[in-house]
Image 1 (cartoon, rainbow, N blue to C red):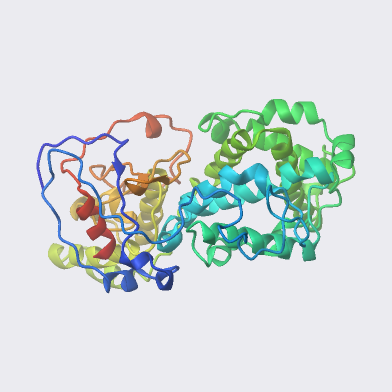
Image 2 (cartoon, helix red, strand yellow):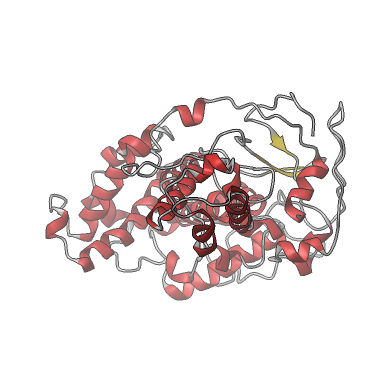
Length: 441
């Protein structure tokens, strides 16, 4: 560890994901399985960027939707794409979202998909599916698939993504089922019916382009989507109060929001629609903590009421936090919310002392691995480069103390712009090999 080295929040950690553990048998594998393949060492920080070891482990995420050398494409049910026969059961226009499929494959790359699921992989997978149906509706006039059609198409999407390096269990990881591509309980599925009910000009004005911070606070686009969904769910009515809406109607409105999003995707080019969809999802994921918290009994025993042994208390916290570090990468805002949630949980169990301060717990402790890779609060993607492999950006805010909540405090507000504008100093330099070790510890 080198003291005094400054690394900006935009540091790109060159995660050499293409290690031995990325062979086919490790797709969807655990970190425990990864450990068995390689035990790297931490190299001193060099003066130049190191070149990662990149074995050839499969197709590039940028592989286009064209037949293979022998004239065969992946074994799909058949889809509309140049140079591939359109005689199968899925008629969606995959060519229109080819670039988004590549982005999704990279974001959901093999063994790392479960650990990037909440923030990167699943939001992008969802956005790609919405875009796929939205773009295809330009030809079909329909904003939903029937259940049989959706099964074939979802299977094809999985096969295409897997052929480009994505995790083979992506549907399970992201809880995506065939019914998610249907209308569910929404009564409107055609573009003509949609546009006869909804003020489409107002909806486009609100959602054509959004500011990823302002939208989460002011909810201009989200309110327009909710209003449109309520209109198509309730036969044109949008003035009912929540108290007057039945649970069944609320479920219909939620289902109709998916129809609204697909319509929006049909009116925007795929990159623009993807930016909007990722921004809307980002508002949701940063409102809460996605971690599962183990039982806190041992921490309470050592740290509750009057702390008798500070060393024992902090050791208990260290063991507890190490379990959180095995779950997933989270954003810096999520980390603050996780810290607040755990703090309130401990306070309710009679831990009154600020043990974050006592035990030097930083917000990095709530994300995967030891050194603290917190993902940016704004939407981000993994990137693929032929030379450096797959990489993603980390905000290394590990010098930020975890906030111990006051009795009246709630979750961290997503509307605080300072969370996005601060530049953080990191008192150590990270090399490729040290990042690999983070994931193997």
